[in-house]
Amino acid sequence: MRRITVIGSRGQLGHDLMDSLTAAGHQITGLTHQQISIEDPDSIAGALRQTPPDLIINTAAYNKVDLAEQEPEVAYAVNALGPRHLARYCSEKNICLMHISSDFVYGLDTSRQIPFQEHEAPGPVSAYGLSKLAGEYFVRALCPQHYVIRTCGLYGVAGKTGNGNFVETMLRLGKERDELSIINDQHCTPTATKDLASALTRLIGTDQFGLFHATCQGQTTWYEFACTIFELTGISVKTHPITTQEYKAPADRPRFSVLDCSRLTATIGDAIPDWKSSLRRYLESQGEICPK
Figure (cartoon, rainbow, N blue to C red):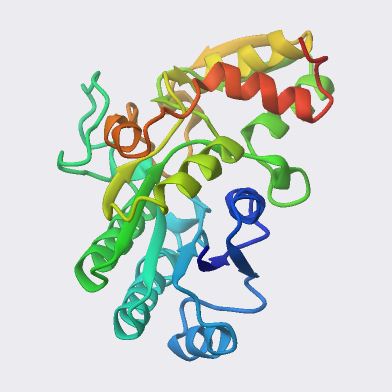
């Protein structure tokens, strides 16, 4: 049993980590943005003083990918300097730190077709991706006892009441509109936060520190992901595949950011389920389809 503090406990991953870690018998404290600002070292020290943990899990992040192009200093403050402050605090207090990062640290290799392994060079193509990569480097450099977790395409039950997620957005738009245009040239792996939380709960029991890729198995595009959502739920909507260039978002996205998770699988002794089975279970849990 460990004393664990989850920063960002009301987010999608934070919410499911709280449940998973509690079920595993750990003593859990959850902190929201109102209770701790990782951009401020004094806020970190004040929030953690009352219940000093053995392990801190940081799920807090600035995730507004397009807006980060206009305000990169804000993204950097949360995604880079925030983890830097946490890493320094954890190093001084001999606390383990798990930091959640992103597949957006990749993207520069536009011809990529093979999943990325942890040792391969990153290459972000957006201000958001650069800020997340900087956060990784700070944690790895400053906190000896660290887990840095790169993941992708998260969705979970807390998305219904928070900032939403791709699944909930597609369910809403599929019911509201007759036709949808969805990007089909960005290859990734959607990942259910419940399944990711379960894998991370097992990982912290190994004390095998370092950089890990952690997503569901398999790969798809956002267009194929959306079509699968509509197929499973029986939503009838006409879909059109489009390119990233046609979508014209302010920030560029990786065309291929599928992550090789074999290191995590070997460490915890099991793979995270494939993305389609995870999606079906999520939709069943939300009452969108009937269980088999």
